[in-house]
Image (cartoon, rainbow, N blue to C red; front, top):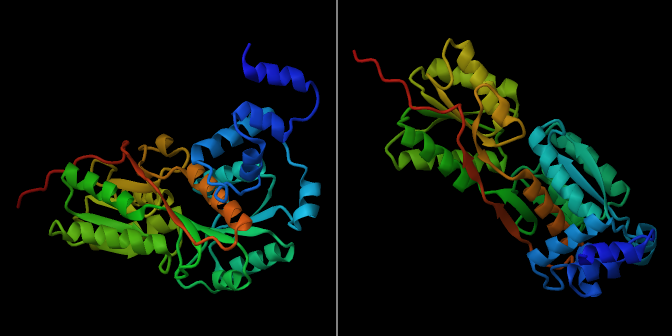
Length: 353
């Protein structure tokens, strides 16, 4: 009989304890306490050990006594998460990853959607700080962000995700924009495309700036001029509007690289509305690999960012920051992966004159 069955039998109907988790995970009870209280870094605990402990705690159904812990530590055990658009499927994966880590650590999550509007972000952050959230996960940062500056000025633990800002004292978990853009551009070049345009995201957003710079630099190194236009928001409607303009101004276009998958979907619609076909006439590459990208028509070639992994890393980093406010800031990059599907193909043969 396995040790897990023995453990279950000896517990009977009582709630699992830290000692049960420690015995099942093969570690000392103090190690379990540090991990589940967000103090893994302070104990120099490896990520493999941390993940094993959290998996065991989840499987056994271990729950913190949150009321007693809150009274003991003076914390609310509530964390806020600020996202641009709660309806974005990419954000949903991040939220789930963060929520699972927070739940295992005994924290509750408050989620706020800002419609990517700085004024809305300010009011949502004020509400979270009003209920004395122990920390914030901030996913709506702009390069010059007064709301974020105010959070930092109040010494509230905060971790950025998806977007960076001009505040080096803040930790962040970000997609590797350079590596992801390189994968997409090299894929299109390998197919034979030379007339490539970029549909970028909103200005003053780090992911927009980074992906556009990488796009232009990579094409310039091949002697190709990178053509781009920025969208006002990361939506299908904006992807359609911007792509339509680019196709009208540059009818020779054979490929579109979009700053995210929603822009890419709008680009595919604009290509169809122009009387052309994707990918026979114009190929499209997205970024993020949001859920159901493989079910679109055509299925979307995109740069995959593991949303669940990113969300989990954001939450872990925030819990460590809450436990040790003096820790130096860190920037973690999430490694991308190119997923080739049906929206890219070799370019059409140029008609000779």
